[in-house]
Image: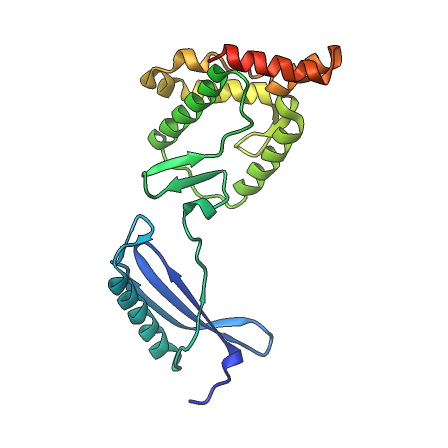
Length: 234
C-alpha cells in the first residue's frame, strides 16, 4: 500500500516488563491518530538494565511486527526515548534500580551533622507512614499544589504559607510541620528515631542563623561561624 513516509510517526518504548510500539498517522488537521499498536513481554531486562540483548531484540521485533500488521505498513524507523540510567531522571524523588531503594533529593545541607540526621530520619519515617497508610486516589491537580508549595518554601523558608494537602487552605510552615510530625509519630517510634527528630526546628532554618551573624558582623564572620559549627558537630 503506497503511503507517504512523512505522514507517519512510530514510537518505541522499551520498559522493564514490556515493549510497546505505537504508529501514528498525521491527519489533515495536523493531529496524530493512532493506527497501529504492538506489545510484547520484555524478558531481557532486570531493574531497568538490559541483561540479555538477544531476548530484548526479539521482544522489540515482536512488538514491531504486531504494530505493522495492525497499521498495514512496514516500519523502517522509530522514535526512541532513552534515559541512559536512573541518574538522568531529574526528579525530587526517584527509584534506584540497582539498590532497590528510593532516593529523595536532599535540601540545602544544614551545618550541623545532627540536623542532617534529623532530616534523614524525617524522610525515613515519612516513607514508612506512606507505605502503611491507605493509598490515596490519583489526583493530577496535586502536582500543581506541590509545585506551588516547593516554590514558596524555596522563596520564604519557614515563613512561607503552603497549601494544605487537602487543597482548601493555606497554613504557615510551622503549623504544617507539626501536623506532619504528628502523622509520622508512630513510624518515628517504630524506627527508634525520636531523639533525631527532636533536633528539627520548624520555625527556623540554616539561613536565619547566617543572616543574623552577617548583619551583626561581616561575611567573613558568617564563613567562620559555619566552619566552626560544622567541625564541632562531627
